[in-house]
Image (cartoon, rainbow, N blue to C red; front, side):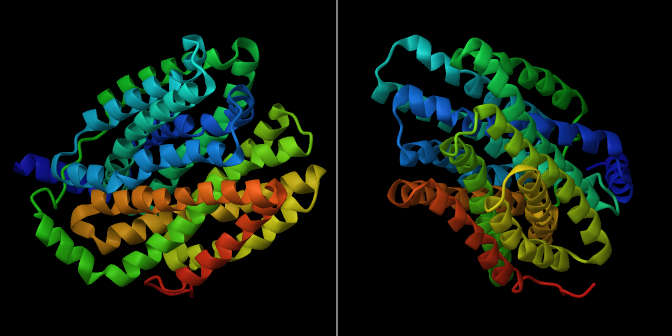
Length: 402
């Protein structure tokens, strides 16, 4: 690397580049909005193809496997060869395959073949998410200066807002044009692709030439705290995906319309994004472990109360629960990156990918539980997960004192 490039990298590490952090956060918004295209459509897909709750959950699981579990592979590649074209291509990829989901109905296939085609498109789309997250999440701390917690939380907020916005968009679009209306969502992905290719930073890494055996030795040396933070993220991801998958189905069983269900999801995710920003800022000030433990500890009672009420009180409790649930996002990412500092892309892949993917597999278990005991019991069972996550969080490095 030349002296000029070294000076540029040093300056970027010392100062907060708000514009490029915002571009990556906006890319996260667009990329993750496609990740939440399926759950609001589940009532329509369930009716159109006669799906069981378990089959509905399997759609989320298929996406989780390709979007999350393989992320460490993309993270290792990002550490060695990562460039901004990768985040741009990733966004175009997921936009293309997700927008085709509604067009399956034009093929005139029977239910079983339509379901197989749906699974295939969702699985292919997941690779776009898998390649975006480790690369972009490695870029953000490098250009966030002394405000890494805030930078990562802003990046996180973009993704959470994407999750929140999509239900508000996809429900009216499909109400007007039916399932083929998903083709309209190709456009924002293509626009974001151009912006990322133009403005996203390059990502030189100090671990660019790290051999696999060196990486394995680094991971082995921190295996206990890495397993602890991975376990926390697994439980949180199971709860997160369980809520966005089965909350619309639970509300439908209560006679609520898809529009009302989309508002519930928006409240959960919008205030979750706010909670992520608060959690990131608080972790810079008071410590990452303290934020993770305290936020997860209050999530379970808040969810239980939200499920047990109705009306404005239910919405208010859902909002606060969303804030508490996602406040731990950026502290967990930064703890993992701090444990493997020479391969932050791999660390991000483990936390944003493998851990979230394993947690997402639990959605199928929740779906089977719903088939056996009912959707209400299954939804209440999700409130156990943040309790388990809180206990795991005490094993993280750091202190629970401010």
